[in-house]
Amino acid sequence: MTKSIIEIIKKFDEIAHDRKVLHLSEKEAQRRPPSNNVIKRSPTSSLQLEYDVIAREDEKRKIIQLLMSHAEADNIVIPIVGMGGVGKTTLAQLVYNNPVVCQYFYWKVWVHVSEEFDVLRITQQIVTSILGSSRHNDIYNLNDLHCLLKKTLFDKKYLIVLDDIWNKRLDLWEAFQAPFYGTGMGKIIITTRYMPVVDIMQTMSPLQLECLNEEKSWLLFQRHAFHGWKPDQQLNFEQLGRRIAKKCGGLPLALKTIGVFLRNEFNKQTWKDVLNNTLWEPKAIILSTLRITYNHLPSYLKPCFLYASLFPKDHYFKKLELIRMWIDQGYIQLTERQILWEDIAIEYFEDLVRMLFFQCSKDKGFFLHDMVHDLAQSITVDLVFVLIFPRACSSELIESRRARFNSNRH
Image (cartoon, rainbow, N blue to C red; front, side):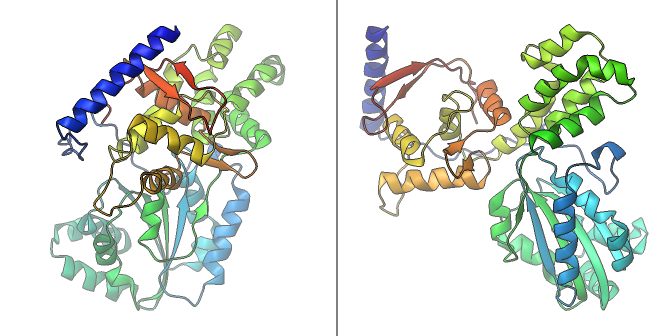
């Protein structure tokens, strides 16, 4: 085994040498044109299922308090940030449909933005929602729409929810905001899984949505899985259900998806298969949602994220420990700014934290959520990775773990 590892390392060294001789470097490749096979999130609306009204009461009260405490301020933006499936949209729906909020605001508008931040389309949807006519969708002059919207909103209390934003361009955000300045007491709630989106908004600190604790996880799973069940039936499956709920790591999407999958399943073996990860159907739905976030990663960050998945689940790692491994593996690209490898690697690491791929525990270090770990392992196919531990990070010189990499990583 040791001889095989040495041979692999020798081969990697030869490849790295050839790369330098040929002056090869990684570049951001042109993105593929859109196709019907691209994973996209389903559209959302302001309406919600009764089953979803659970577990976020504290966060709901906090946002409503922010809306009311800034009653005299104009154009306040409240960002809700969290990983995919953590319940950002559900929380925004809870606030949007709250009776106090409905009574307070004269206008309320919900727009599902998604990946393309089309200022014209979003403005058309807001105007149409407020004025109640689709004829404004035929107005393609942004100035006309802005003037109409500014006139309509003037001196009114309004709430606009922009769900699922990915835009990082300041010019597009400023173009969108133009008609809202000086109109009255407007409030905007945005949801995003991407911290760089918040940076361009120059607004208050975001509400970062965390995963649910164990008891709230169980309540949410129970509500979905045992809907319509008799009490004695629930009792027979409760122990298995609690173990499955715990395994979801507090991610509401996982709790709901698996709960619904098991709702009409009275075979204990099926529940055990879900617990032991041998049933792929519900898991595939969850991973497809998380995959959208991975697709938005720059190409140079993708191998760094996937490399972290070589650690076992529930493993806590230190920042310096991981960035030294990235440097050893040749994942860090020098830039024209002439800064050190370590500084670039730290920037990579902090980007992955801000994009919510890495989570932080104050006492233990950083870790991957179990579902994010599963996502990485579902991508890593067909290649062997050698995990090299620097002497400063571990008493072991080399640990080899097999991981499979998708031949089309980007």
